[in-house]
View 1 (cartoon, rainbow over the protein chains, first blue to last red):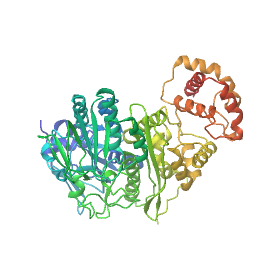
View 2: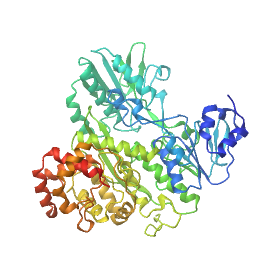
View 3: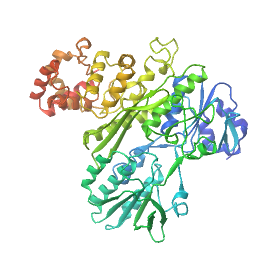
View 4: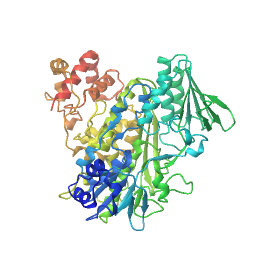
Length: 420
Length: 190
C-alpha cells in the first residue's frame, strides 16, 4: 500500500499522522517538506525514557507548540526490570507500553528513523523527505561499538547483547533456559561509560539466581572490563555471597568472541569457554548524534549546556539521556526522564523568548539481587554556575523486600510520567 | 548565572501545569510520587494536596535521618536547598485523588471497626489536623499506610518525637493484621 503526499498531509491535519504513516508505510515515498510547518514546532528524535518524556512535557508546557516524535519502534519496552525477564520474574509484555498516552497529549508520532540533521536549515531528514523544526531534541540512546570486539559484528544473531529491551531479551532468556545443567554462562561487561552502570551486575544476580534454582551444577562467569564493580559495588558483593555459582573477574576486557569454538578472549589472551555468552558491547551515543556532529572529542558522547541541554556544538539542537556526557550523572532512565523535563521547559521557554529555569536532577536507581529483594542508590544534584554538582549519594544499607516494593512503585510512577 | 523566573508569582490565567509556582523545583519528585504527586503505586505516598506544614516536617525528618530512607534523604536535602516552602506550596496546590490501589473489602470492614482509636487525632473522617501536623490519611495507598504504622510500632520513625509518643503506645497494642485492616480502611476514604 502506498499513499501520496496530499493524503499524508491531510492526515497530518487531523492529527492521525502516526496511524497513517505507520500503517501505510508511506513515509518511504515522501519527498520534500513532508509536513509544512504552520507554527512553532519541536521535533524529538527517539521515544525512549528521555525523548518520550520531553515530547509530552513540551506539550504540557505550551500546547501551541507542535511536537513530532520520531521513533521507529511501535511500542516502548522498559530496559529497567528487563533483567528480571532473564530469571522469569517478569514477562516482556509486562514491560511493554504503548504510545497512546503521548497521542492524547497531542504529540504526533512518526514511526520513522531520522537519518540526518541539518542544523543550518533546521531540518531533520527522514527517508527522502525532511521535517522543519524550531528546536530539535535528540534522544537517540546508545549505539554499540561492534568493532571493539572481534567477531561480534558477524555473530550478532547468536551472540546477544539484550541491552536494549525487546526481542533480544526474550531470546537471551531462551538461551539461558536451554543451557545444559553444568554449563557455563559468560557475561561480559564493557568499559565505562555505558548505559545503566549497575545493570550488568543486576543481570549477574538474576542469571546466578536462575542457575542456582534451576541448574544447580551450572556456573556464571562475569568478565568485567573495569577494575571493579562500577556501581553499588559493596551491595552487589554482599548479594553475591548467596551465589557460589558466580565467578567475578575484574579487569578482564573481552576483545574477541568466536561462536565456532564457543569462546571469548580477553585482552591479556585468556580464552574462556562458554555454553551461552552475553556480550554487552562497548557503547557510544546513538548514530544520529554522531552523524549530526553532536559528539565531543571522544567521538562517543555529546556535550551539552546543563541548564538548557542545548548542544555545545549545534545551535537549536538539544541532546538528552544516555547520549550525553553523563558525569557526574549516570546514564540511567531516571536521569533521562529528568533531562527530558528540563529540556522541555528550556525549549518551550526559549521559543517564547523567555529565560529557561535551572532544573536540578535526581537519580533513583534500583537493582534486584534475587527474586524478591532489591538494593538502591540515590543521587541528588544541584546546578552550580551552570554545572551539575552532586549534593549527596545514598545507598540502601542492604537488600530487602521493602526496597523491592519501592522499586515496583518507582516503575509505575515513572512509566506514567513518561507515557501517561 | 541563570535566575529562576518569577516562581513566587501566581500563575497567569490560562497557564499550563508547568507554570504552577514551584514546578521547576518539584519536577524530579514525580519519578517516584507520580505526575504532580499523584502516586499510582502501593508503596509511595500521594503527596498531591499535602498540607504544607506536614510536608516540611517530613522533609526535615528525612534530611536529618529521623525518618530513615536511603531514597528520601538525598532528595530531602535537595528540597531544603531549593526552598522547602516553594516545593511544599507546589504540592499543596495539586489536586488530590484517592489511591488507585484496590483494598480488600473484608479488611476495610474490619479496619473501620478498629479505627475508632485513631479518630481522636486523625478525625472521624481521617482528614487529620493540619494545624497540629496530624496528616490526612484519606485515600493514601494501603501499602504505604501499613509500612508507616509498622515503623511507628517498632520506634523506627522519628524516634523520641514527643507528639508521636501517645500514638506509638497505641500502635504497640495493635496486632500487625489489624494494622493491615486499618490501612485498607483509610485507603478507601475520600
